[in-house]
Image (tube, rainbow, N blue to C red; front, side):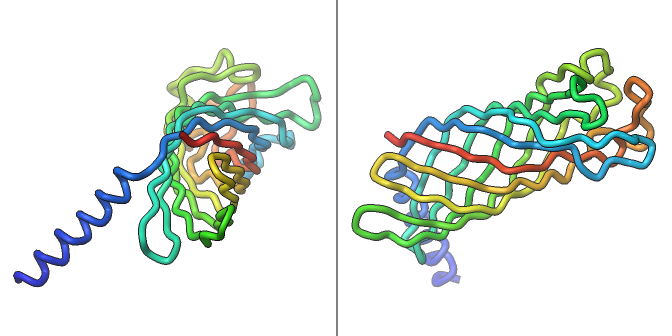
Length: 198
């Protein structure tokens, strides 16, 4: 029992030390999202459109195999456009909490890394095609994961990752929006980011 308690306390001490020696940063970039897996009730194909993200990030390195944890708080605008009606687009504004779990290699002047990033999001706004839709017919909660990589160069961090949304835009019981149903629609796409760490 004493050995287990000592080990747990040691792990908390190491994690706490890494956390206290971490670095805060500001981060922003572009999203290239599309609305995928739409139910057959919707004939339109929703293509990729450019959105953006901006927020805060915190990187804490752990002394284990180049491991680092980087939680973030992001405002994201995800957009998509109807291929059959080029002037018809939609967007969703989310407050997103991703956790980037990085495995990297600390070299002399830079640190390349790969990462997996589970996330959870809450919708704060909607527009264009969704402007008149009721929040009762849209899922405000989204979640998913991303895979990608990046590089730390001094205080600069550049990352790229592909994001797979697992949360559906609408439930099966939701009403169609302007005659179209997005019951299986999920946002996914590529995200390119730049962060400045303090």
